[in-house]
Image (cartoon, rainbow, N blue to C red; front, side, top):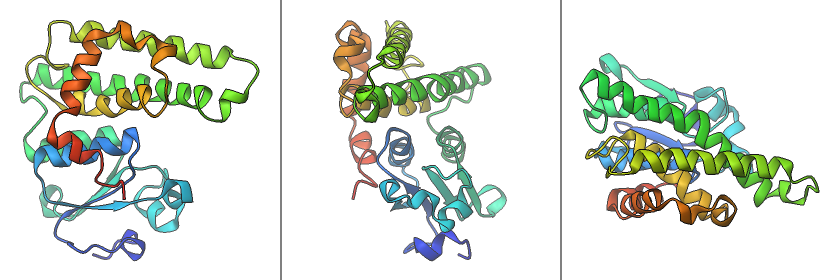
Length: 229
């Protein structure tokens, strides 16, 4: 392997798909997906607190400087593929494995729709709420930013709760990349971000049931910790 990323994170198993990530809500998506599909992979932790995602070796893989990213030595046509953005990676791995994304075109696009909803709404809003509720933003005297993100996060939870009414998973009976994309974010919101009370999480019984069911999956439990150490 001659990619610059391997100068800092050498591959012990160069024939396997290489994951570069950290145990954040976006990072765990790909760990969970890889565990769910059974694709052989090797995980490398990128220490984002030490700014390793802006190391030149990582930027050679992802110029945006964000985790997660992958390097697949056996990409399309048998050629290596470097890929970043967690949603794009989920779609790629679903197509590569033939799992967790419906083959029916209408159902496929509906699943991708919910994935985009997570990426464009849930992730940014929950992340901002975490900043203003738990981290540096909590010291701000003006609570309007916190309250704005709390209200929008609660609204998004309401959308998810309505979707899950009468459904086991976002797409019905079939667990998919839509669920994988959201599990880590909802878990983080009420856990690490300590925001359950401020968003009134107890109101969203369908979301709670879905979250408990998802987190009970052994593949999810393993995927949450693949880059934890």
